[in-house]
Length: 244
Ligand SMILES: Nc1ncnc2c1ncn2[C@@H]1O[C@H](COP(=O)(O)OP(=O)(O)O)[C@@H](O)[C@H]1O
Ligand SMILES: [Mg+2]
Image (cartoon, rainbow, N blue to C red; front, side, top):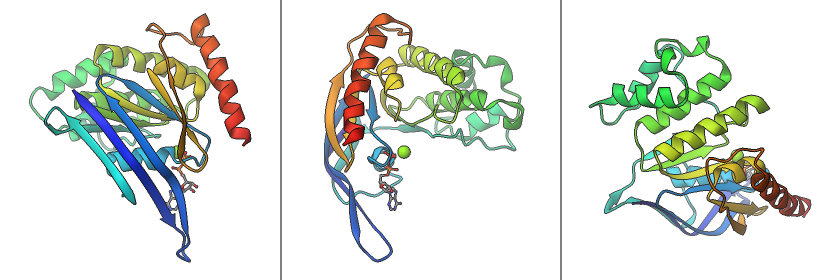
């Protein structure tokens, strides 16, 4: 079983004059097992910094982060805000490029391309795909390495509302089929409610404001009444936070 353990995490950035700004202030959070956790918070509350520290892209100032899978370090996958496909490689070559374990990778690639509805597009180049299709490739690519832990930073925020709604459904389906430990950053509360088992709300200043358990049956649709009701409730709480 995989887990992300964040203990008393503090991050301070320094400006050019050396003045410190604390952007994460004592984050304690454990995510274990096949759990989908969203981190929501107003712009600037430290969501991306938190995810980058968890992934190892960014250093921490104090505290600790442990990513484990059983008795070894966890393998981590990352889905970025933009899909970051290599333009001179086909879809399949892009997926092949990131494989740590080459054995059977083509079968895994086909499997996840199929799950995001793009089984036919393996030979296309990124420029021949729409933005939504490219982001679906990014998701298939991340799942195809079968990571223990999957980190996603606002993967749908550059897409139009219809495309992002359809991608959320793809993501939920693929996650239900191949459960991972997921940490998903978004500023979109409705998206968080639809996808998550738990929602971590960050407050300005980089502290955890509250943690909300989402105990709704899956698959969920944005139009489900229980989903819509919880979305409205969490949104109301979130608006109070943004107004602070
Ligand atoms: N490399 C950096 N150097 C200095 N300040 C940074 C850097 N990255 C982020 N920040 C600051 O840290 C705060 C949190 O940023 P970020 O994690 O991007 O927030 P979010 O993703 O929630 O919008 C912001 O005030 C931002 O300006
Ligand atoms: Mg961000």
